[in-house]
Length: 280
Ligand code: AMP
Image (cartoon, rainbow, N blue to C red; front, top):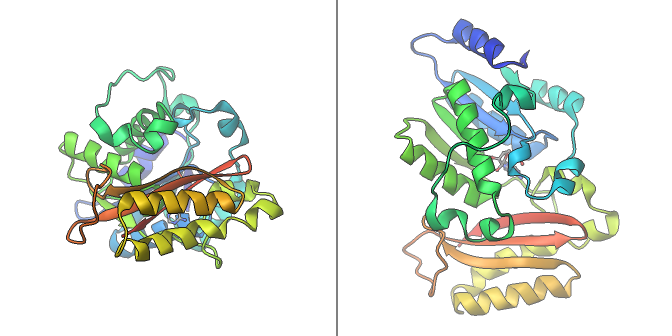
């Protein structure tokens, strides 16, 4: 695996590897890698000629500075893991390399309601920061295919919208959520859960699965209220549990199984905020 730290070195290596027919797969991450991230790289390896993974903890998408400070950084182990899946290029830029003009966002994005509901409501500015870094990374890597996890469903929906606004030919591939044996969605933040709190977290996926069953007989409002109560009864603090249209992210008044619907939730487990979702 090639490790590059500057935009200039990245260009040099991409130019060296690229031929007129080769395709590039790209997997942006914030590091502290786990099997979920590696599944994206494996997918990319299957369908493109070479894969670029980036690790960059993007300061502009953290609305909470404590969360940014506590975000796990495990670069040596990340490199070992990336070697196990034969990743081709690791791009490991500094903040200055990504934001040569400083951290202020000069671009005003307009994602309409996509960015104001759910995560957007509870993490103001998060999606602008995310879009800013993904756009910059896409300009540098110029991939043919971009691999992102269903785990961050709203993020993926917003990136899809951004690619459409940019008239981009990049293909966005949604990859399934990889879970621990007891159902907890893998996340870099899981290492911060105390054993006692960790033991409570399987309820999140259990409730998501049960919500899918209840959708056959109950209204979205009833399912959401039941889910919030059930998660809370376990000693966790749900921030939202919403049933939304899978494209517009608008709350659905009724279940309609002809359309794509998603149940999305954010839950505080101690001082760790977890998100998860399930397609209905
Ligand atoms: P992050 O490092 O958390 O920014 O995530 C980088 C990419 O990995 C995003 O596209 C995530 O959606 C994806 N990802 C994170 N966790 C998982 C998981 N458990 N399963 C599949 N993909 C994931």
